[in-house]
Length: 151
Image 1: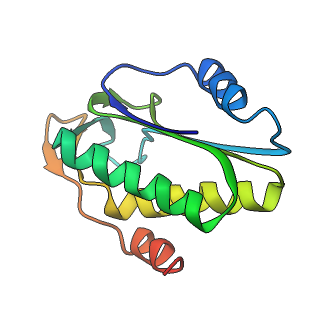
Image 2 (image 1 turned 120 degrees about the horizontal axis):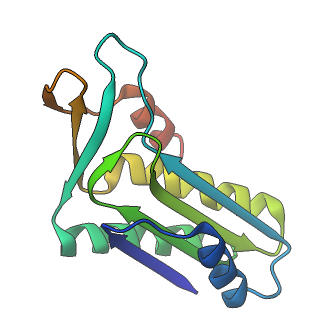
């Protein structure tokens, strides 16, 4: 079972985990990744991120990534939740989880999803800093390198 949600509200990891298990009761391996908005410990630290997106385009891109992961590995279930809107430091921003018969497929599927999501999902991020400055976030070369390793 595949599930993709883009939403403003936070998510409950325990509830999502149980939904994943309900969809894949024979799973022998489950891998979850939770991404949080992190501080950067600079002289002008990040206080929050604001994510913008085009809803249909973002939903389609994430669904395509999940379908690709399920075609590439024998995943029993895969779920992705990504938040949009203004999110403070320390809050959850993304949850990726996969279930498979074996751990290796689960790890590979989860890693693929988060690596590709970071570079192909159409989200635009603004940083809000302690000083009051606001700036768009540029793509990172390290994210591009991680994603290109799957091609």
